[in-house]
Image 1 (cartoon, helix red, strand yellow):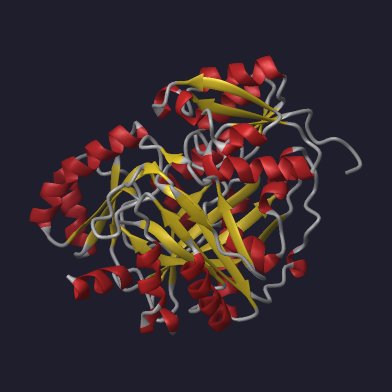
Image 2: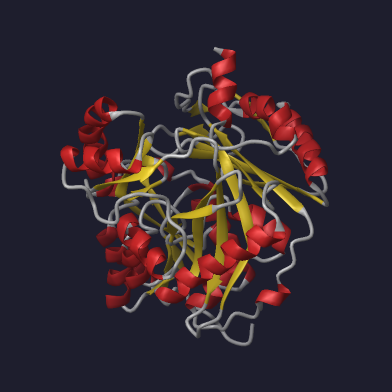
Length: 452
């Protein structure tokens, strides 16, 4: 680097994403401050950072969501930038604004970007202004169940109730008739209020056999904006992604280009900065519809890194420091295939969390195999946080080779002492529809339904 980007970066997160950011910072010669709860004292991100500050007890609201403690940690360590990772405060406009007020660079989009795209109803209106296709649905929050029923009857069942401030698969309920909607509305609204501090809901048409395909964007503050292909995230359980791949086995060049243009149109509308992901629902005839935008680095960003050869976290750091994008759209070449499996600590029969001590660990390796993880042999998986243990990513010249490589990697992956979903992933990778790339959002429902 010709100049130092930041004096010191504080990573306001934990787990594998904290390690991912620490490594990117160290490669750029930037010292790193880790923050941790009392429960995370022995975590790898604490050990690998240059400095570490305890910010509170295990409960997230008292530690990783405690803005005052995190900003105080930045102050006492002299950190002039904060990377929020994903989750926790990553899409919190208030936190981004507080960072600016404290003369600390928030490594992510602006507070205005987060506000504009974080409200799902407002984001739909922005997409509509740019002529990006939308599913039939409300462009304003529905004030109560009666208005929701009226909207649903106009749209046509089935519909999906969504939290206006939602994310991470929470605050979502699929309903097939007015009775189900009456039953679900108050529960969904209460769930949204508890999770996001905003109980507003909107109604949208539900397409069960569609695909969930998203576009990765990078935008600098000087007006350069590019997209780096797409990721297919259709393998989901309870609206939580389990497997992601790039490129999508369903997308063709025409669809890819059209979705990329639509994503950049939205970014242009809000003068977007830094990394982001624009998510679309794609039907069997390749019609696509805007769903939402995630104003942060995604869990599944490694598959894009593998196929595009771009370090997205380093790009976040460079953009936040005011650098111009060195990558042009014509430079983006997708010439391989990558797949990611989320390895979770959960009972594969009941999908219940499975905390406890890891008594034995063996991770796969070989050409084209990547593990993003924070666990180690004898590590105790905590009950307070997300169940994600590791992201297993493979990369190969083509999809068939990538599927075969992932099968081999799953066979080699051993975690003992707790239950994991490794065997469940193996079932998916042996299913004919997945092997052929003929899956949609209803795939896991069909798979689980056949095995009950």
